[in-house]
Every structure is written in structure tokens, then in C-alpha cells.
Image 1 (cartoon, rainbow, N blue to C red):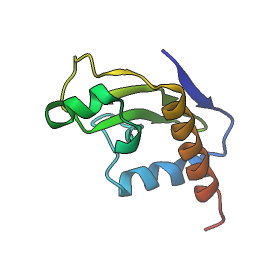
Image 2 (cartoon, rainbow, N blue to C red; image 1 turned 135 degrees about the vertical axis):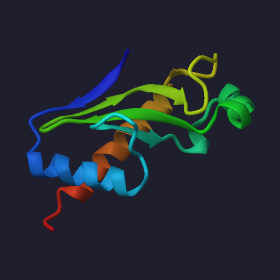
Image 3 (cartoon, one colour; image 1 turned 120 degrees about the vertical axis):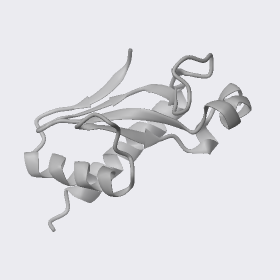
Length: 111
């Protein structure tokens, strides 16, 4: 499994990121785990075909006390097992990493 890990972050920044994710409805049933939506424009053709029964699609984002871990597996939110669940391709991977870096920059601003 591929993941993008950002370590040694200030705990306050991680709290801001968790608050941001919570406010946008990204929370999962597990503390510290969030579902970052994958934009429809990045869905594979198979994911587009399966969207009605399997979608929407998201990747997991774990927010710890001083780290972030973005799992680069695109998951179907409405099914546990399907062929449309797949590792992010290079374009999707880069877009998700860029989005996370943008969120870090946004939440790192003084409040």
C-alpha cells in the first residue's frame, strides 16, 4: 500500500486540520481517520461506471498528534469489495498530495 506521510508537524496544526476535516463532514467512525473525497474528474473509467452503486470515492487521511498519513488507495464509500477500488493513478496521486499540501498551508496560517 502506498501512502504519503508528513511527520513532525506542530500539534496545533494537526488539530486545525482535524477540525477542518470534521467541519466538512469528512470524519469516519474512527477517531483520527477521515475520508478525503476524490473529485469526480479524477475517477477512472471503471469508477465512473460503478459510481451509482459504489461511489462516491475517497481516500483515507489519518491525522495524528504530529503527523498526517494519506493512503493512496481510492476506496468506494458504499462497497467494501469491488474491482473499482484501486490504487490512485499518477495524476490522482499528485492531485491528492497537492490538495493535502494546500490544506496544510491553509491551516498553518495564524488564527
